[in-house]
Amino acid sequence: MARQTYRVVGRNIDTLRVNGHGPLGEGVLETLLALQDEAVAQRDALKQRRRDEARVVTPWQLDGQPLLIAPHGANQGMWQVLLFCPAARVSIGSGQLNGITVQVILSSSFLWQHGYRGAWDKTQTLLDELGSFTYQPSEVHLCADIAGKSADTLHDADFVRLGHVTRWRLNDAMVLDIVDREATPEDHSTNELIVRYRQAETVSFSLASPHSSVVYDKPREIRTHSHDKVWFGDVWEANGWDRRQPVIRVEMRYEREVLHEMGVETMAQLWEMLDSLWQYSTRKWLRHTIPTHDKNRSRWPTTAWWKTVQGVTFERADACPGQRDKVRQFHEQRMISTILGYVESWVAWKAHEQGVIEGFDLYDALVGIFDQADDHYSHDATTFLKQVEDKRRKIGYAKDKEAAAKQRKLGMLADEPAS
DNA sequence: ACGGTTATTCTGAGTTATGC
DNA sequence: GCATAACTCAGAATAACCGT
Image 1 (cartoon, rainbow, N blue to C red):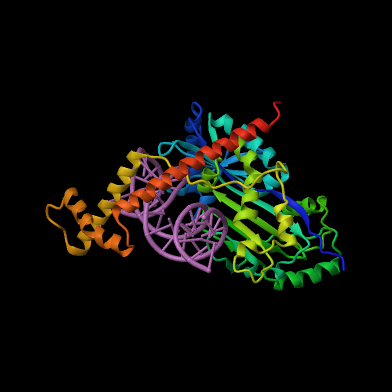
Image 2 (image 1 turned 30 degrees about the horizontal axis):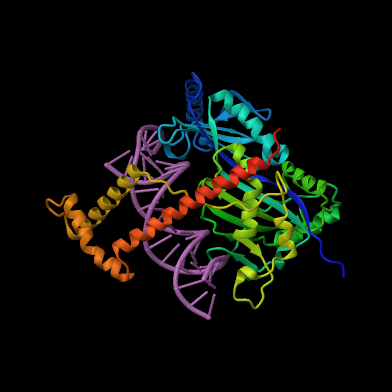
């Protein structure tokens, strides 16, 4: 019997969110706010329904489409201005909180149609018209579409991952519904029946965490109602899809915290690290395996299907798995304010439970905490000093790792031919 | 007045990997 | 084979200011 072959029919960044630090251009905010006023006036002229959908055209464009301004900001005040177009959604604020003045979310179709680099180049050209920013990736979803395996054959117990137990979830997550334009009328009717009663199966891992993953099934029979999604089938077909094989999408999601730990602070670093991210996620963080009797799950062999997933490349084929290094730095001011914040909350709760304690000041609060320390430490059979020693080791370890990372980076630079 | 916004840091609990 | 190291995750906290 011929061995089942799997084919990578698509790979891309499917979601990209980028922060921009830096000042807005002269008069840009004024222009935008004036346009926003127009949108507000338009909204107020509308009666009841769809009022919030009022939009006014701005002078800026992305991918040939004008940016439209909404009559409101976004996210309860962090962003004063909200701009829309099919390719992206741009939020603009004053940057007073943490220096971030602009945040852009690129749409999936934009990213697929131009490739992630092309889409970003266009976006950056637009953003550079608004002000002078330095860009930092905030959220990235890497995905690969693999043809030749049906999601029915996936079992949660086969997935080995660091940390926590896998969780299955049945839901109707984003399932692409694409129709074959060449489909004959009778094909269409059979497809329709199957699709209607088919349930999409999604495996999700650590969904709420900074690093998460989703593995989901695309129905074998693909149909669509909206023509703007038809190109998706074309992308797969260009990569050898026969328009019949089942396709499973593996998606790895990275939020700011993980990117930070991986050393991704700029767009250039993001492109450079894409493959390291993917290698980390598919080799170390999550694997699909054939279970054996070995109690050590890390020794379970990887399936051929997952090896295909591991073999997906974005920029370069020789990447090593990235490493997540907890970034440890002594930020004394922040530590003090956090400690004091905790003490304040503790006293606030105490006062809530026991009534207001007259003349209870910081000193008394710290004494109160001191009184609880014995209980706390004896519970874990340790002492304050032991814990401090422990922390000192950890800090030392972090420093060693930092040095090692630096060493690796230097090594990589040395390997690269001077262009 | 209050709740919510983003990035970052720390901690404890729980699980897996690894070194001797 | 066992003790310890390493890792993940969830949930605290901070900053300054906007919208309801």
